[in-house]
Image 1 (cartoon, rainbow, N blue to C red):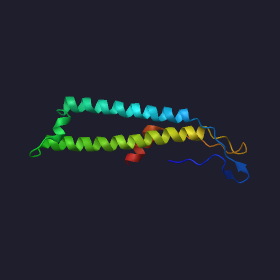
Image 2 (cartoon, rainbow, N blue to C red):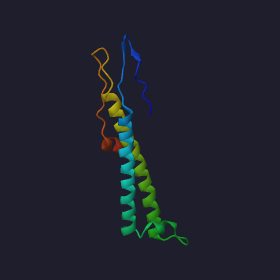
Image 3 (cartoon, one colour):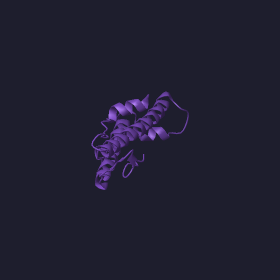
Image 4 (tube, rainbow, N blue to C red):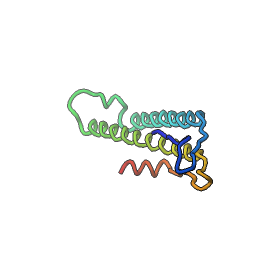
Length: 124
């Protein structure tokens, strides 16, 4: 997602932003920690309830539980991907729009997008 706001014009007014790279690092750092945490929780769930990750790689005829494990992992991958998209989009968008100065003291950009409602919209 790209934002081309700084030094652009709307009519006679100029947009200007004050963005810090450290805030982007913080957003992406929390994202990486969250994905690692989700991976750990997923591994624990698979270890306790589904018989471990090794069940996915078993050879031989497919049983109902093996098919269920494959479908569960596939569905979980999609959920993690859509949540990742929702998290990064909302956090970066809110930060960029919150730090864009008003246009001639009349137009103020803003965003109050939240992760879970946007995530649910992505799933639909």
